[in-house]
Length: 185
Image (spheres, rainbow, N blue to C red):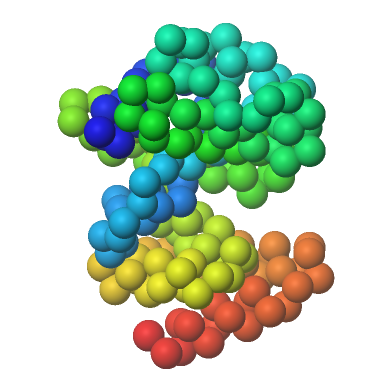
């Protein structure tokens, strides 16, 4: 059922010309080890003030927003959670602001999902996101991606991006985590 929901959502986004990429657990399923996930996370090439563009393309008889006060919620969290009415599948639409997110959307890759082309975050950018998130599950996801894709992953690009973001955020732990993980693998 998640595949059907993903197809509907991406068709709506493409029809409206909204740049997007699938991230999170669904992207890990494409690039890494299979793992249980019941939701869909999608980063949009929109900022919160453009949320009406998104709301206008989501059919109200198929999807409904979860927050009571959509505008306040989106402006404070940069996320619009919606639910697919029939399946109860949750979709988190994440509004983007950083140059990294915008570049990652441009670098996303089209993957066929039951006959529909769906844009997924690249394995390199997914690894960067997961290292920055830093939860144990995220680190496990990185290991799964690297074990599955091996030399197909551009490790130099990953390291440069993590290094750059770590420097900008003054958070050297991100690069330390990556270097330690790379050493262990």
